Image (tube, rainbow, N blue to C red; front, side, top):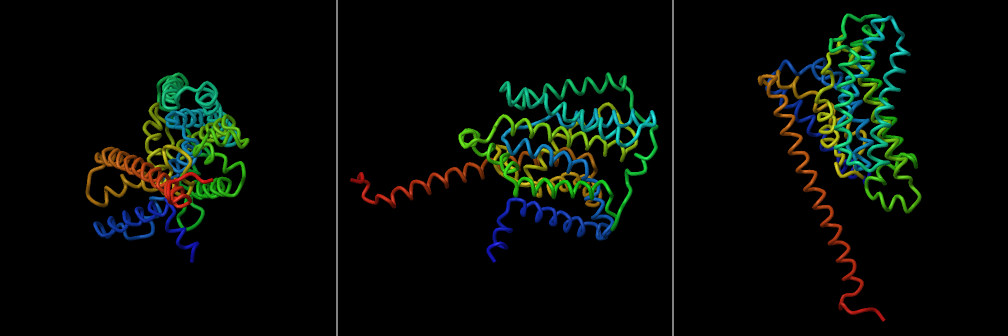
Length: 337
């Protein structure tokens, strides 16, 4: 019974309820949405956002941020397309995506964790540099007309209309969740975000944890680039632009606090489905897709405000509990002999 109560108290449960409510409202507005194919397509289309959300979740949990993941996705997608044009293997594409993503993550980690530059400022600079590298790499042209085995995997399903990429993304979420909640090293991310000073005192390497978080974030962004190229079959120079804000919103919507030290991967994955489904659901509701950015922005603002209020309330409640505890121990207010 206690497990059931704790389940409904979980921060990600509100995201699940919100997602179900969105599907219900859309189904009422348009009966054509009331079929399995329409619903499962919302999950399949969230693959890239799920990978980005999982990656940046590691960083946000440590109390930092990374706004360069959209550019990292763009450059790795372009690299995938260029390798495919030359007849390269899938292994070489994945190796290029993972190594490039890890390299960008390492640069961010050194700037933020080692040199102490504010994460928003440093990763914003990294974003500009990587965007410039995309233009240099592609000569300012769209990478297209690449096929081969990568193109056949884009929308390939394995069972129940679930694409192979989304199935792998779900498996990644499951593994990441287990690592964060069941392993000692995984719990370091939450510990560092909750209290970096305290974590350092008990022997947790704050520097090492943040470096690992940024490298993982870059790797997941690189994998997102591979999926992007495989799914769309062409990569423009602006590929991935704005994806970082959607991934951040997905994490916060899934219950991950922007101040760090709170959240899990299940919430991030649910938030990714919600954010990626907005444009699709707008079509069924009858609103033009031009509302997508506005609605996403409003949701992000509302979510951040709610998160800030929740944090303030939690801090105030903790202070009250400590005060009540002290007054209960010494009701007369005098000093103990």
